[in-house]
Length: 306
Image (cartoon, rainbow, N blue to C red; front, top):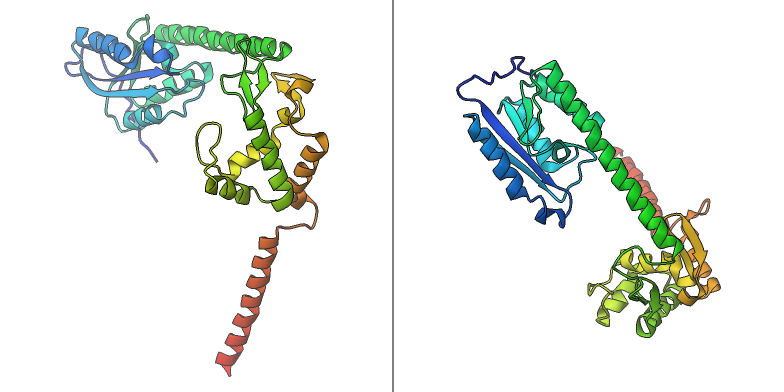
């Protein structure tokens, strides 16, 4: 059982130990609100109050929708050990965008004797009014997060209605046009058809990956083939012209590379062991071997007893 200190630090204490938490959620954001800039502002805030910076916790390219962040969790552990008195962050949305997490973490830190402060917002959780303001700002951060999510969904839905591809990386067999639509590449399309033919014959994704690597044939990203990479090809319905993005489903014949019957046969082979009372050959062999070893073991026990 963990025992938390109950005394809250006083701002008049001579040696208040501060910890700084900084976060960016994406590589692009690193250049707008960088870790270094956040830490610099927080350190100036700490110095202006005569405190000392004990720890600096930084999470890079990690979203704040949950508290499952490496340095954030480390910060909580240090707080429970009583390693600092105040936690400073640049803005509340760097700390958390979930109001529920915000309140729960604030309560946990308060039990540890740790108060929260924002270097750019009027937040002081040492009083009931300060905690109310903290949660109010947290509500705004959560609302902003939800609005961003809604706008992203609307944008994806617009892409779907226009039959445009949702990211910058086209699947094997295609290239992206300037308008964001898929266009078949003849050379890559032949490789896709070859993979399907090989699978219908070998019924093994690992074997296909081995053959392609032996032939020094790379993936679209220039990597070695794996069974998982082969599976990605075999399960992608865009190869039969089935387009599905952000809830928009349609058939685009111009994207067809594989015939429906070939794709269906490959799917039948891929799912063949999901049928009732069906198991993989190697699994059957392992079971027979285990059964034989069990019988031999019994006979050995009998011989020892005699």
